[in-house]
Amino acid sequence: MSEQVKREELDQSLKLFIVLSRAHRAINDHVHKFIQQHGLNPTEFAVLELLYHKGRQPLQQIGGKILLASGSITYVIDKLEKKEFLMRVACPNDRRVTYAEITEKGKEMIESMFPSHEQRIHELLSVLTPDEKATTIDLLKKLGHYADGYVPSK
Image 1 (spheres, rainbow, N blue to C red):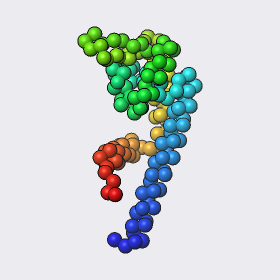
Image 2: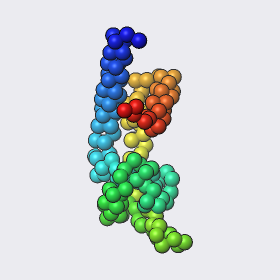
Image 3: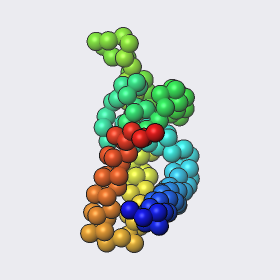
Image 4: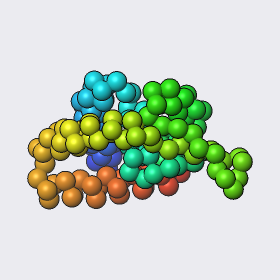
């Protein structure tokens, strides 16, 4: 492979990274603004959404499910508990485990905003056809799986 071809491939990879990063930021900016208009930050919303859709979760596992460092979970859980959107529930079988469970007030919050949240995401992504979305999903999964297992050569 010539140096020219290598350089073009490196440049293309960098361009893809930049375009992907900018698209992610632009979409997230809209989504985060909407969430903040409802008095939540994106992490609080992610925790409530997880509990709403998946039910009671051990505190120790929430961070991994919403991609948040475990040290930050306690802070977020405390804030949501103070707002009465969730409660801590002790595990009856194992005193080391505490669950987070969404409250009725938390359910009402998610139910009041989730349809608009979902619609906003749909509108943001509506520039792509259904086939383009399917292709993009497949390509991003391929990229993500490769990156998860990537070991640098140097």
